[in-house]
Amino acid sequence: MISNIWHTVYPILIAILFFELIIIIHEGGHFVAARLMGVKVNEFSIGMGPKLIQFKKGDTQYTLRLVLFGGYCAMEGESEESDDERSFSKKKVIQRIFIVVAGAFMNLILGLIISAILVCSQNLVGTPGVAKFEENAKSSQYLQVGDIIKSIDGMRVYSATDVSTGFSRSSDNTLEMIVIRNGEEKKLDVTFDTEEYEGRQIIHMDFWLIGVEKTVGNVIKNTFLDWVSYARMVFLSVHDLVTGHFRISDMSGPVGAVGIISDAVKMSAYSMLRIMALLTINVGIFNLFPIPALDGWRLFLLIFEGIFKRKLPDKWEWAINGAGLVILLGFMSIITFSDISKLFR
Image (cartoon, rainbow, N blue to C red; front, side, top):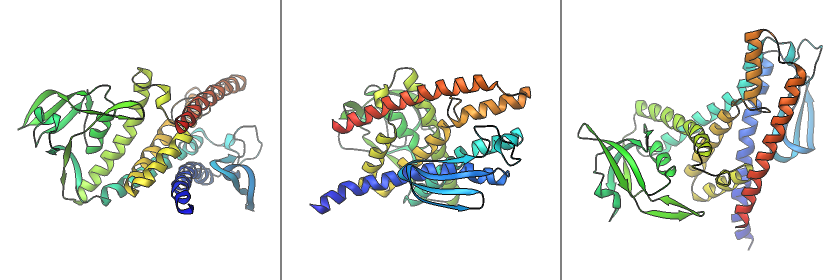
């Protein structure tokens, strides 16, 4: 009984800790950049809610809070006027830009490190070439061993990870694929079997990809290719959502992310790290979108200030930030409700 409970609980705990790690890395980026630029950091908090542990070192209060779901780096003069020369608002525009983008940058670096670990952990380095087919594979009627997949439904393919992405985005069981066969490009409409997953029909990939022996060169190359592939998923997801390819209910928020990571933990360390890489890169890039209440909006305002040598009027900034925060919280509430509904289903 206890063993069964632990088997259910420990993946969730690991998922929460990993999700918190992504946030700590992000806020830690802001913290280090602020200190490098001589900005006073009033508090660095891990978690949200009631305080568990708190101590002060220098000018900074370090806090561990009860709910390990969030955190923040509170800088002097960040959201209010301050006469302190070490305040955020007193620094040059380029210094403030450095501090604002540092959080996302650290998330992207973490994603690159995890991508390198994943590539190095494989026996072979994956390529977008067809190695062999499953027995009675439907795609073998169209594809051939040795075909190099160049694009899927118009999406350019550079790596084995891109092949998986292309399959996951399909809305039916037929993919328009461009392959290189014997040095020539061929355009094919390839039909696959489908299987149901969480109420959706997804394509069953019925062939394996070619793996090559690891070298320093292809490990470095594929690390960056996988990193770019994970980053591109963020923009593809936004495109698919805007064009109606996916619904809001298909998206996942923090609750859903914990569920996805915990499922990956049960599968393997490789699956867990792959989801981690995708999530931390997702957080890094999405935070740079010019959406009010995100780092990207602050970056937009700083660029505006740098170009026009004046700030957006405070009343406008507060109004836009307030409206953006309400919309963002409403959006997150809808996604969280969807996540919880999925758990009950």
